[in-house]
Amino acid sequence: MLSKNQLGFLYMFMSICAFSLMDVIVKWSVNYPIGQVLFFRGFFGIIFYFFVIPRDRLHNFYQTRRAGLHLLRCLSGLIALVAIFIALRKLPLATVVSISFAAPIFTTIFSIFLLSEKVGVFRWLAVMIGFIGILIITEPGISELNIYYIFPIIFCLGLSYVAITIRQLSSTEPVWLISFYFSLSITILSFFTIPQGWIIPSFEDFVLLSFIGLFGGVANLWLSQSYKYSEVSLVTPLKYLALVFAILFGYLIWGEIPTIKTLIGAFLVIISTLIIFRREIYNKKIITSKTIND
Image 1 (tube, rainbow, N blue to C red):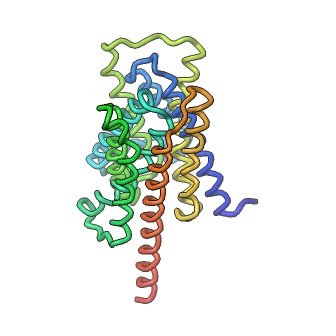
Image 2 (tube, rainbow, N blue to C red):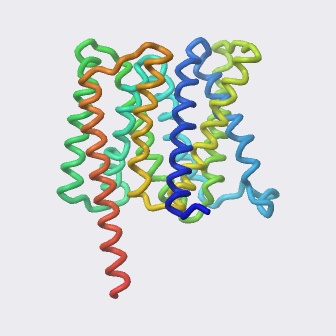
Image 3 (cartoon, one colour):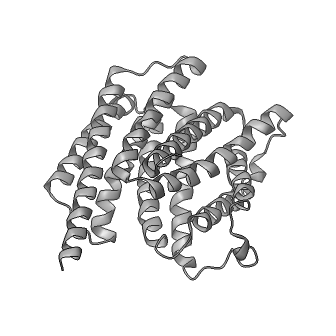
């Protein structure tokens, strides 16, 4: 029988594998319109969530008292998703994954203005280190005026706001409902792109495209389960396995070799996010101890 921490590790590892495979298929799907790929991500994600809705909520699973906040979460998530899909098609896989690690940096900044959180010297230092890492990674794109380097940053901005809204929603809403509304919004958005011309996929392509939604849906749930069973400080470092997978898949499938600048920048971004996570955990422990003493 696995302990809670071991279960947390297992769920995090499976989540990383699922997200990595989803990224690979998205990058492979370059011959299909982005709107059509979004449809597969949303629709097959919805199908998956119907299997995890509790039986006592099947008749009213859609009910919520926080529709406005769900809408904000879905809009920011859609911006992030479209941006990362474009980035995956136009940039090396390792580069996109490296920049995407910067999301906690932007979350820290947003939390100051949206949640009125106090940020100390260590977290500001982490933010600065992270931005230096981003500049190192994107410098080739800036020098060559490659506009596609902006899309992973847009993804980070969108994902950061998603993290804020989920933090607010999770106090009253179940994880599956938050994820369901997001998948539904993806599907609805995709329908508006039909006039741009969808392509009828072959059976093999249909199956692969379907896995985008299945991998995305199950990865989100496994990520939530990981945080449920284990402390964030224990499982968060496993996230950076995604860079190893990105380098491996990028080389084996597309012959991509990450540059030294990309690896150095990724190292700085990873260091900055680890500092942020460690400070958040430290602050939570202080708050908890004060509450107990009081």
